[in-house]
Structures are given as structure tokens and as C-alpha cells.
Image (cartoon, rainbow, N blue to C red; front, side, top):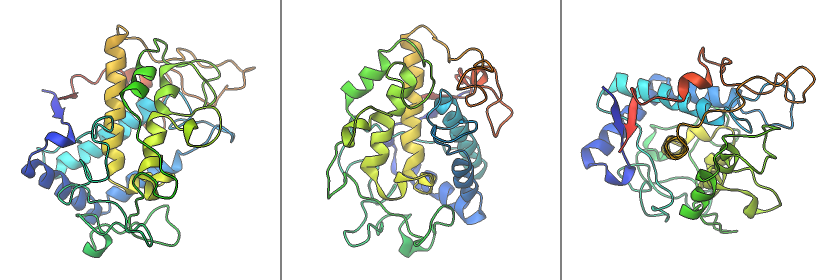
Length: 288
């Protein structure tokens, strides 16, 4: 029977507590940091050579779906009642709304060094030291809304702009494409400055701090953000009659993207799974 991922704003006090406790237990066991390492290992920009599986490529959505499932399975081994909630950033849009409460993820970073000092992941608790992908600090940082150069979160119109595109992705299958649902949702825009960051990418920018780099998994909001992104993939599929992942076949040997992206039935590293196998997860979970 499929379990349910809920809107973080609807969680009960008990549900919040159990989710947080399960995350802290994974951290205590050393399991959580492996998820950071996996994300770091697959953070390959399209300006570099080699395969891109996690970002700037069609497999952005299935890759993160599988990462979410792995984290969720780990959480449910700790507490079978736990699922990953999602943060609807089109509705909960301030630095004091869900999920930035003391009983869930804690709040913004302090002005001096952006260190998060409230909530269960604050450095002072000793329960959430950052160990992977960090250089000079081991504490969680946030700069919600980017205080020195403010930006806003994406809104419903931004999501609609992506959702109404009936094509999943288009050649050259990278960060430069201006058509296709995948990049409109992932958010690599044209131009310069904050206007070029759309949807998923803009949320990372809005949170700031730890969420800005390849080690963004160090901030637990990463999972709530990506669960909402994953929900948009489901909504897009329903709207467009189960439209499929593209490309269906790998680029040929003479094409620039040969060996650089994952086609629908190719293996998605680091797992033994294909994007096609991740298109329908209705038997595993659903969204409330």
C-alpha cells in the first residue's frame, strides 16, 4: 500500500517530532552524510566533460526522485511512520512560515555569520555537525531571502510556466535549453543576475547559506524542497496524459551529448535503475 507525503504545513506536532528524530538518528549513525557524499559525487556541470546525471540534464528529476526514495527508506527503517514532507514555496513564502519553525527545521541564520541558532539542527545542540563538502565551518548556515540583495521565492505563475510545457526536454539536453518542462522546472535561465534563476534553482538561492553549493544536502530543507519539485513532475505527467521522459534513445556517437546524458532506458548512476522505471511511483507513495 502506498504511503503518503504530506505538506509540511499540515504536519501535526507528533509528525514533525518523529520526522526530526528520524533525521537526527540517521545523522548520529553516520548514514545521513552518505547522502551528502552521493550528491557531491554527481554534481557535474554541463561545462565539464563526462556524464551528467543529477543536474543540467534530463535525468535531474528521476535522479533526485531516487535520492529522495533512498533517504525516505532510511528514515522509515528508523520509524516506519515517517515520510518526507514537502514545502510548498508558492504558498509558505516568509522566513518565519513553514518550514522555518523551531519544531521543524529551525529558522534563519544570524546576521554575523549566518549560523542557524534555532531548532533541532542548530550547531549548539551538537546533533548536526557538517562533515561533508565544507571548508571552514561545521555549522548549518542560511540567509533566507538574501538580506543584502533580496530575492523572492518563485510563485504559482513561475510553476505554471513550466507545467504548461508539454515536452519533457529538448536537445541539446543541458542548462541552455529554453523549451521543455525539465529545465523550466530545474531553473537554468538565460541572462544575468537573479532573474536567470527560476523555480528549483531560485529556491536554493533564496535559502542561501549551505543550500547554495553541491553540499546543499547538509541542510534538511533540501528534502522538503525536492519533494515539492518531485510533486510537480507528477502534476506535469497528469496534465499531459502521462507524457514521457526524453530523450527516449541516447544521442549518437557524432553528437555533442553522446555519453553525457542518460536516455530513458539507460542506467542512472549510481543505481541500477533507469529513468523509465522511476516515471511511475504510484505504488510506492502519493502526495496529499
